[in-house]
Length: 134
Figure 1 (spheres, rainbow, N blue to C red):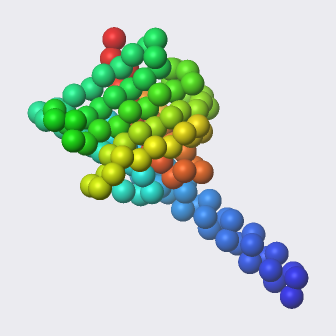
Figure 2 (cartoon, one colour):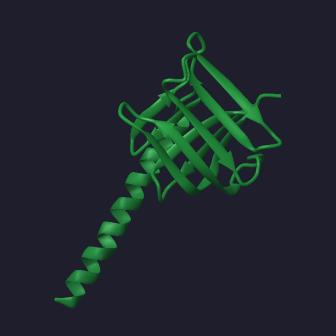
């Protein structure tokens, strides 16, 4: 019986890892500034109705609608600048009903293209695409 439990646990971990890899791969294929939380898009930047901001000194990225009714703010421990880099961030974003916060979220830079950076948190199932404006 114990052996069956061990096999079941290992199988569950392998399947969960495969699902995370698929989510991460799908996240990396899409373009545009956005925030993905648990497989759902929490915010997507639209050039005609949104604003972007970046502060290197504060290590902060902001994206929001013109009215700021929907937004996300990510404040990083360091500015992302290399593929594979791991860093932490405090993240604040809106939902339909509330403003949510995630402190000390560990993210990994999974794609870097021009001024765009794709960051992924496997533990939090959160994907974030930011643009370094300079």
